[in-house]
Length: 167
Image (cartoon, rainbow, N blue to C red; front, top):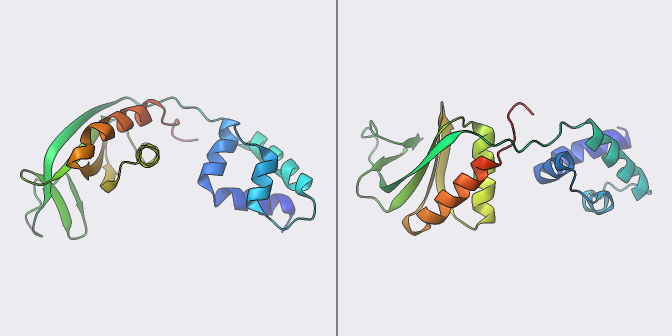
């Protein structure tokens, strides 16, 4: 496998580096050291990173049109009682009414890319996510009740800068 191929493969295993290359905010020398491909010549890796970055689609933080709302009091229900669930995965279903969790619901132009971007924003804001999902035109993240207001702000900010889909 060529050094260029190994470099591209290594970048793809680090999504943050891939996005940084797309956005044009990567120090190529530092990235080459970080990837540590065992090449005798770091400059060859730097050159491979530059060429790869030129081939990537430009990072376009276009944002997405979505309405964000908060639903407090989410809780788990027994299996089979999930008809009103906002989120159900496996044996866990979260429904409004009496629980200690808060759901942040975004409806509109959301997809898995938006969910990934939202989760990254919440992690950067140090908001712990209990559950998350996306389907159709709805995205839901579930947090502890006290984190609800911070989570709303983080979700709104993330959706304003979500990269255009199809990139």
